[in-house]
Length: 310
Image 1 (tube, helix red, strand yellow):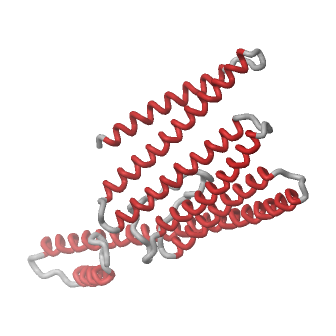
Image 2 (cartoon, rainbow, N blue to C red; image 1 turned 180 degrees about the vertical axis):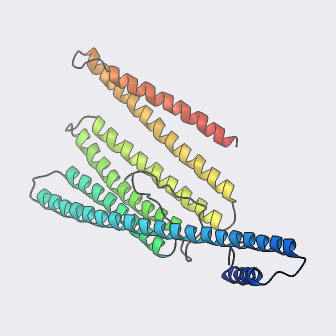
């Protein structure tokens, strides 16, 4: 259906015929000024119609060029993501072989597998973006931050009958669940090594923090998938869905900030003990890091309170 401001081809052709006829028709005696005004008005109407048509054509050309740029950008991203995935896949296989030979530790395999999962996640996203473009959708770069949250509009309509928003979310959900499984295995190994006196307390502490972060991220993805489903089912309005997603994002960042503050406090306590024993310098930089983290946590609390009052 044409836009209400877009002249149809039939209208433009009709106006052109009528105007040319009026301009070529001899003027009746005694009505020259009136006919001249009518001719002028017809020319104005034709110019407006043709001008509107030119604007529409220009917009369509611009959209076509934008799609071409998006396809070109996506093509480069897919190629790079495929090369990165294959390289990390080969590196992971090498790490496994070297571990079997007793050359590298299990932690190195875990790290290689974690990076491989991240590369696979990025590859799946850019391939899905290509499918969305081919289906007539409009995408934008979403995978610039490897471990970051995707900038998805939970109120975007389906494209060609497909819910690409939920498909992107499910890719992240599967990747996060796999990361969490690896992180829990690493926590078990770190705990065993610590109990045996082979690693300091900070090693299982870092592993536990990684598990907790991934658990929060997985829960956040569950919330986004549920919010998307409710919106598509008509249970929430656009404004309600957008506000709920903004609150969820802020709460997730606040939870991460709380975890960082707790971790920095523990690190500072250990560093102060070492400094008191004369085996380490004063942890001045660590104190500054803690002060900054606590200030950011307070700002997030204010931001969240403002969102809840909307």
